[in-house]
Image 1 (tube, rainbow, N blue to C red):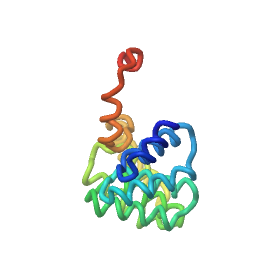
Image 2 (image 1 turned 30 degrees about the horizontal axis):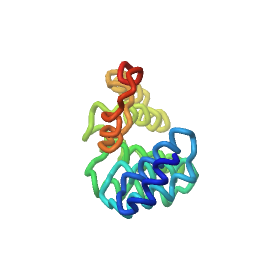
Image 3 (image 1 turned 120 degrees about the vertical axis):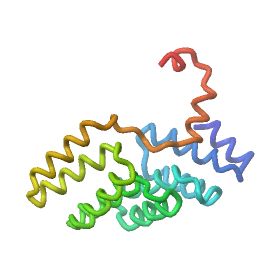
Length: 172
């Protein structure tokens, strides 16, 4: 934490330092304090989609639905058909009892990325809500055929992990 703070002081125009600091803080369970760091990252790198998604998710977790929705929509502007953003929008729609809107987002997500299990699982919940049990079972089956959930790709974090020289971590 201290090193990334110092790096931000010495290299204030580099978007990676606030992003890496936000990542570490999120790993420690912080949410609200991370939002300023992610906003700074986005100011310095407006099209870095992982930062946009992390900020939208942070707003969703904080109950800031409008900000979360704007973030997910911004991510869709950067990454067309992004299943993570569509999943976020569907969760917001469900929270607002917009079941049909949620179905549309989730259908778009599974059409674009058929192997995205979380969308299939949430789509099963939507089908159950409408009493479409056969569709629910099919969505659950489709979800079971998908690989387990993976966080959205994040090239900056991946490149940071590539620099790890801890032998125990490398064995993991």
